Length: 614
Image (cartoon, rainbow, N blue to C red):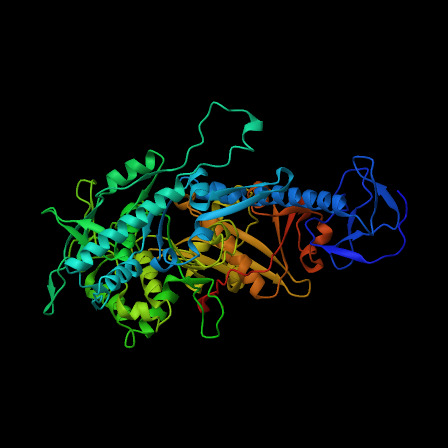
C-alpha cells in the first residue's frame, strides 16, 4: 500500500479495539486507533480508480469511496447492535407488557415516531417503515395497549359547546361526555388498528426466499374485557355514567395473547345491566397490569420525569417513589389518594393466618397485598375473572401539570405494590423511545422497581452463623475456600446478605483493593431452595454498583468450579499477574484456581445504593 503524505484525519467513532479495514482488502482507506481511542481515516494524496474504472481524485470526487465507507461502517454497527441486543431478545420474549399511551401523545405529532421506526437501506435507495410495537410483537413480546382519550374528549365537548367537568381524578360523565368518550375511543382504536396493519417491507425479505409465506400486519383484538360499575353519588356529587373497574376478564385476554394478537383495551367498561361506562384510562391500565401479572407496565407520557435540578430521574425504588409521593400528600390530591389507597388499614398482611405467602397473579409473592377501596381485592374466584380496582389519575390537577408527573409516578408505585415488578415512565416525544428503553442497559426513561434489591443489606454480627451455613456445603465440595466463623466475623464489613422471612438466603463479599482500583468478588452462595430465582445475579449486580461507587474500575474472581457462571456475566480469563500483589501473596497455589476479571462500565442507570449498604 502506498504511503500517503501527512494530511488531516477524519475522526470516526471507535467501535472496536483492533486495527481493521473499513473497506475491502484492496481499498486505499483504512482505520486505526490513535492514543485517544479514535478511529482515523487518512486522506491519501494520490488518485484511485472506482469499481467502474473511472479515475477519482480523493480531494475532488470522493463520493463513491465515502458511500462505501459509510456502508461498511453501517454494516459494522448493524452486526454490533444485534449481538448486544441478544440478551434483551431473550429477556423480553414471552413477557407481557401493558402499555398506556397518554392522550397528549395521540393529539400531537409525536405519535408516529413512537409507533414507527425507520430503517434506511442505502444500497437499495429505499426505506421501510416498521412499527416499534409490531417489531417487538414479532420478537415475542405480548402487548396490551391502553390509549388515553381525555384530551380528545375535552376537544369534542368544546366543539359541541360543552365544558368538561372534573371532580378530583374523575370526570363527571353526562350524556354529552359519554357520547364524546365513545367517539374518541372509537377513533383512536381505528387509528391504532390502521397503524399496526401494514406488515414489514417485502423488498428485502424476497431475496431470502419464502415467497409463499405471508407477512401480514399484527392482529389486534378488542372486546368487552373490562366490567365496570357506576361510580354513583360520592359526597353529594353524581358522576352519572362514570365507571369504576370492577373486573378484568383475564382468561379471554390471555386467550387473545396466546393467539398472537395485540389486545386493545379502551377506557370504556360495560356494566352488568348493559350500560357503557366511561372509566379512567390509568385505572384500566393499572388494574389490567396487576390482573395479568404483567412483567412491565409502560407509561408513554409527553415529557420526562425530572428532579429538582432538571435532570432525568433514571431509577426509583418502590420505597423511594413511595416516600416522594407521601411528601407531597398535603399539596397534591393525587398523592393524598395514593396514601389513602395504600394506607395500613386498607392493606391485608403479607401472610395469611397460616403464615403462607399471598400469591400474585404472575406467580410471585406480594410484599404487600392491597385490599382496594371497592372492597373486592384480589379474589380471583375461579380464575376466569380478576376482581380489583386500579389507580385512577387525571382531573384538573393532572391537566395543569402543577405537580409535574406526580400522578403517573403514583400510579407506578401503586402497581409495584400490586405485584408488577417494573414500571417504565417514558417521554413519548423521544423518537424510538420504546426500543431505546428496552434494548439498552441504562434506558432513556424512568424506571420504578419493586424488587431490585429486596431483602438485601450489609451483614450484621447476628448473620455470621447464617452465612457460615450457606458457605459450608460449598466449602465441603471444594467450590469455596474454608472460612471459620471467626474469619467470617473478621471480614463481616465486606459481606452482603439477602434476608427473607428472618433467614439469610444468600450472601456474597466484595474485597476492595483501592491502590489498584479493583475488587475481589468472593463467597457467593445461595440457599439450595432459593436457587434459580436470580439471587446470585442480584448480588453480583449490587457488588458491581458498590464497586463503581467506591471508584473501582475492575472486578476479579478466583474460582475452581464456577467459571462458566462468571464468563456468562462478562468476566474473562486472565493471568495471575493481573491480580493485586497483596492478594497474590495469599493465594493457595495448590488449589489451581482460575483467574477471571471484568472491566466495569460507567454506571448511568441512576440506581442509587441505599444508605443501609454504606
